[in-house]
Image 1 (cartoon, rainbow, N blue to C red):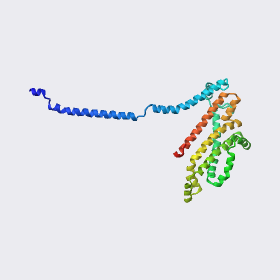
Image 2: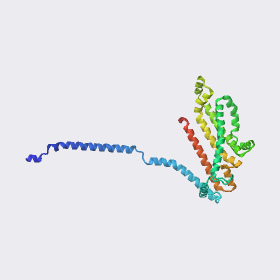
Image 3: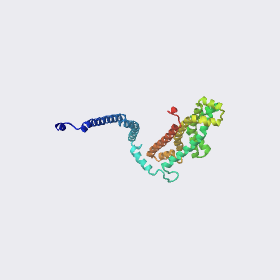
Length: 309
């Protein structure tokens, strides 16, 4: 009876190792979980890295705009506010863009209509230049005789200022609007002709040898071989042409009058409204940047990775 009091039952004695094994399993699982958690923490991107990249992308442009506004404010103060400062120009811009599409007659329209009129002229002149310049570039680049024939003419006419062609347009077309479109046409055609011809001339000779062996027609050579290879060069010429066209249309509209952002700038100068001139400068810059950005994205979509810069 005494021994029965001091000796443990067989079930209790057998259960001790079972509990001990469970404790060991739980401990091992906890250690493994902690190890995995530590590894995940090490592999997780740290917070400061995206923040640093964000500020590296945003801070330099902000500094540039801050410098521009600071210099602008100093110039305004130095001229006795004859050139409006940033605050006064901003107030004028808010009033101007409150109703950008009003009409009070043919010579008194909102800035929105003037921008659209300029874009319409650029689109027409640029479209005509593309319709003529791109096929001409293909032909000049494809045939040596045409290249030698038109090369000196292009070298002679390309450096001529586009505005020098404006009186010719006024004389021929007898109207300000077609003369402005003619000026856009003549300044837009050269980049497209030159870049397209350069792209055709840089097509690998092996491609042309294969076309000769297969006895392909000129149409198939142009559509199946030349066009895919020349497309990046052609789009570069298009991008340069539209930038030049937007630069030239402002000066052309100053001389021809009518409706357009260039005429609007000149009209505001006649009214001595310098704040509106500064606003127009920003509008011209924003529209030009938007056109450039759109064409760069289109060119990047059709350009091979190894040829992108």
